[in-house]
Amino acid sequence: MHPLTPLAQQAFSRAAGAPLVEGNRIRLLEDARENYPAWLEAIASARDHVHFESYIIYDDDAGKAFADALLDRARHGVRVRVLYDWMGALGKSSGRLWSRLRAGGVEVRCYNPPGFASPLGWLSRDHRKTIVVDGCIGVVAGLCVGDASISCRSTTWARASSPTRAKSCLASSMRRPNLMFSVTTSRTRGPSA
Image (cartoon, rainbow, N blue to C red; front, side, top):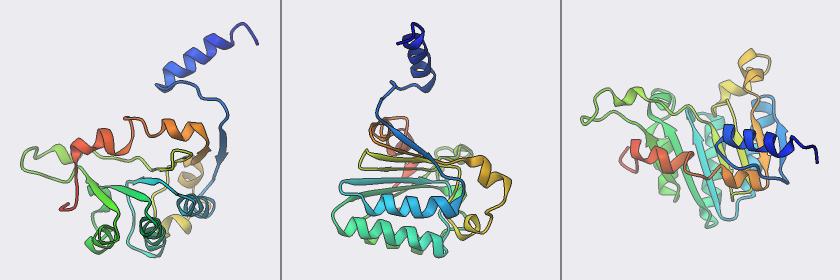
């Protein structure tokens, strides 16, 4: 081992806010045409849980495909949790989509909807797009879920987002309190949102 390796590992660990974990595989996926099939495959493989967080989940064909996949897992006894952003969903998702998911056993939460207690609190947004499946597969992306993402194959933002799919132990660290339902729950509302 190179003498600077432990120092480099310590620096990366501090910068990431998580310990280095060996034995991971990372795959870069360029755009929705590459991402969506991989995401749906990961969801279909779930046996214990799916944590799905997206700024926008459109109520269109792509959004319905993801809803169907999530509902299928919930029907098979998998704990499925979805977190969407109130502002991101405004005008893009419908109450029908969230009601359908909830009726099928999916735990759906809305991030930071407006409320009287904090009139300007809704300005804080959740732009994360992450998926964690069984603590073994993790996705960190820049893509929202919707037909519009599929049709923009050559756009700069689709290339720039460089979503990453991690498999193995790394995904288990994505479940830590810096993600999803733990920290964001203080700004979410459940079934009534």
